Image (tube, rainbow, N blue to C red; front, side, top):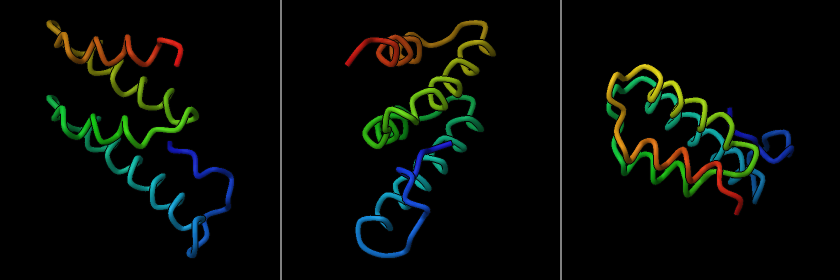
Length: 87
């Protein structure tokens, strides 16, 4: 899901930091996808860590939440709107 910046992983220096960021984003996306009502705090953390290449995967997770809920939350829909707005 998350882009590792094309660094091939790596265990040291800045490359390890990028790999850790990508793994953390993946972990949080999995938790958000599995939770019927994910916490705003968890989604805020993901949004802080997102790189442009990560946005489609995150948006897809949120869209599934909205699609699967008869009455989706307004904050969830606002997050999706924010993801579609140019930076």
